[in-house]
Image 1 (cartoon, each protein chain N blue to C red):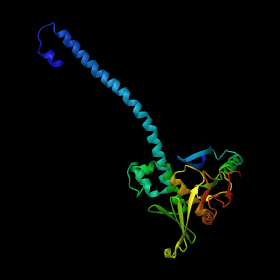
Image 2 (cartoon, rainbow over the protein chains, first blue to last red; image 1 turned 30 degrees about the vertical axis):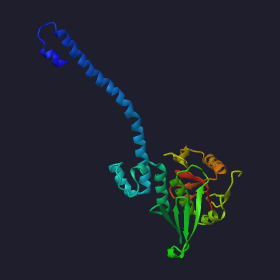
Image 3 (cartoon, rainbow over the protein chains, first blue to last red; image 1 turned 180 degrees about the vertical axis):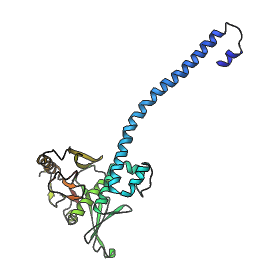
Image 4 (cartoon, rainbow over the protein chains, first blue to last red; image 1 turned 90 degrees about the vertical axis):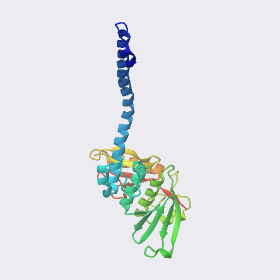
Length: 196
Length: 72
């Protein structure tokens, strides 16, 4: 549009040229103003989530693993704490499981968690618990039971956290879970029914 | 700082009750916990120590209601 104005001479073509320049400037202004207005609403919903995510990470990791705190302070998106990837860090259930693991003194070994309660050693994984007959000699075999929290819809990480907390407080629960097939057992060892 | 009674839910941990431990009526808090236990079988654990507790006191800032487990 501007190139056409440049090659014309005389007074009459100047009016369209000026109009063209004004139109072009208006277009530029319109683009900046409206493009800016459309960008702002996208920024706003992200900011509170980012803030909340940082809170969850800092709260959860601060308690569960002091070694992670320095990492969080430096860069919350950095993945430098073993198997906990960035998606896991956003998951409150995983964060809570890590807190429970630290509280109970359990250790993560691959897909299972090893918990020592006195002389008894448990291996807790998704839906199953093994109790070693002799913690000092794993070759002596083990007993195993499946387990599931009565509360439906709980994330797997929180199912494991529930079992770890209860076993750490009362290792005899293992026998109840194994023997009372399908019956809900409370943390104090009492049976629970909905009619209670 | 407010104290919280939490439980696990399908979305992770969920706050059941939040209160100021300095001023809250602890009898009322424990009644609410007993009612929740009667409905769900969940029992309170102190998340500072990981231990099951009989009653919540002003010293506990975070209590997790832990649901029953079934096995077989």
